[in-house]
Image (cartoon, rainbow, N blue to C red; front, side, top):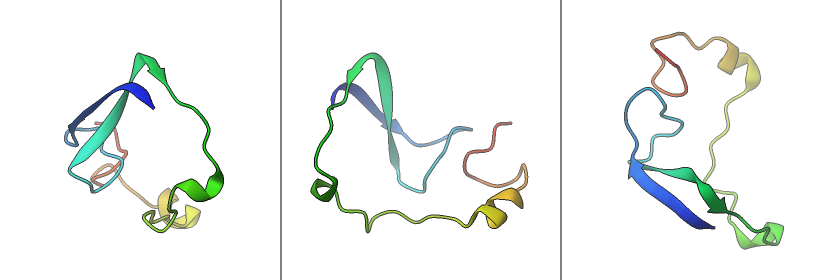
Length: 64
């Protein structure tokens, strides 16, 4: 990746619990890498039925 920003992860667009988030810019470029180049153990996925139960007071991915 090239030409991106890292900002504090706060406000209404929080996708994860991490302190920071990546922001893609108009000129951000991303190139493919082999599947095994990035560890997949750092992700925590939510079952879809649980996702559907989330309300406006949920902390992540909820616009206000």
